[in-house]
Image (cartoon, rainbow, N blue to C red; front, side):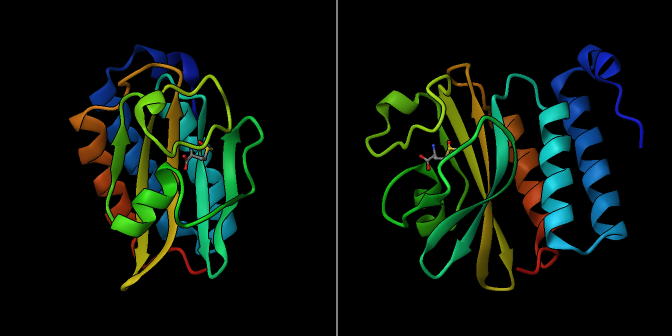
Length: 163
Ligand code: SME
């Protein structure tokens, strides 16, 4: 595994996301430990997706969403199911994109640099087991391209993260 950040900087976003997807496919075929998978996937995302200040997982437990492996500044360790962008993705069981977090009523600030956010739910059968949370310091950073590619990533991880 050789991640060359200088080479990645030369790629366009589409190519970055395709390489990211390839690495994630390889990871899930080589490894089944959920912590190892979430840790490396966070690092792959941070390396391949431009303009992120935070990329990581929140794990769904009975009592709420608990911080999982991530890349970025320290974040809230616990989120409730009724407040914030991650909680909305949990309740809706769908990807949530927020172009301007200041406009999202319940947004929970972990890093005040974050301006836009994308949250992707991951399922085991019918159970929503965890969420991928991406934060960017750029407003409206996430486009239809990221939604399409992260929907694919969600499908690759389906039934692969046993928590
Ligand atoms: N902004 C999120 C909280 C998690 S941090 O961004 C890492 C939310 O509103 O759910």
